[in-house]
Length: 478
Image (cartoon, rainbow, N blue to C red; front, side, top):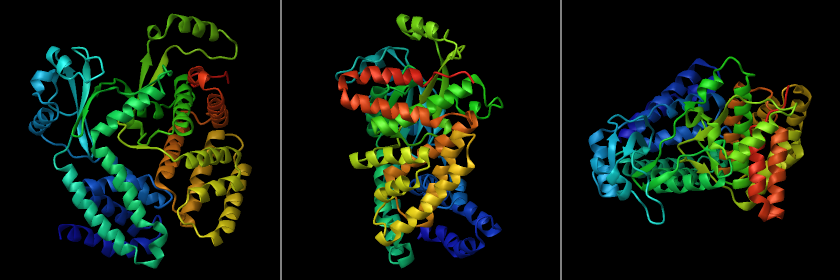
């Protein structure tokens, strides 16, 4: 009943927003009302709004942009509750596990909040897990604690969401949205985020996948429980400080642009495990001290930087990716289609791109295939003719254009695939602000070549990984 009253003004004013069109005063006011309603409705609705902000294939650009504010609107819970969760999860009081534990959280999200702490001498032994070396005493860690009542609230919210989606499915004009399947995808995604043991497992996988990359780091999980997670505390400054840098062509911005591009393409096309929440707040940058490199690597780096076509860096940046609760993986067939899709984007190949999109779709009517392909070919042709100077800009614009075409045809893409494409679009926005001239095609070609070599010669996988990681921070002279 409370949710009905809460959503009633939103539903009553929806027709005015629809008919006023994008940019209209009613549309703008309704978007803000939608944002406020979701913030009051509960964690599942807030998460749905965050998820909807990343689905340009389904929702108009202005609505998605307004919903991005939900990433910053997060609740907090009292320290007293945190003490109880830690005791229930690990069997010991906070004072027994940590010599320091800050009373105020350093960050908070829809599912939980994060504290900075220091492991005590007794905590080093008590937090040890089977098969793992105990964490050293005095180690600085991040402790994530789930908000109270989140599971129950999400379970109740999804009961309501399923009833709403079932009712909306009876409207013929909304059948193309496949709301039942969309709700299932979202419920599965959110269910994984509520269980912090899943995030711990994914962090372990990310650390393994990037074990040869000195220039990329993830928090390392120490001990995990569904309601709490202890991981290494990672220092760094937000990527926002660099995307706001007026010196967009600076050496550091150029290296970060290429490194970020290499990391995300490797996740998508090699590892098939993508960090799906890569907004700038979840990307930290810090200097990688020279002594952290092996002696032999430092020698070759010094020699390499003397080559005339290489610009040396005064300090080596390291990119740290945090908050890995939201990830995406693909089926083997979809993974291959994604490779074809990215190849098509870089070549402005509308035929191959439309085929990949149709392969990704859910029950797209056969009679629309030819017309969809024709429009996609025309769209890619316009980009190919319009963009000659900025390779990255053309890549970004062609992705956005393709998703707009998908939305116009009401083509519903499988959730994990869309998450990966949207992650690329989020990356494109960051890359554009860091270095507009960042070359996509050379990096993509090297990633795909490395994937092929590793598939044919598995014994060379580590060597290929190392070479690709070195290329990710190598810049040619402009």
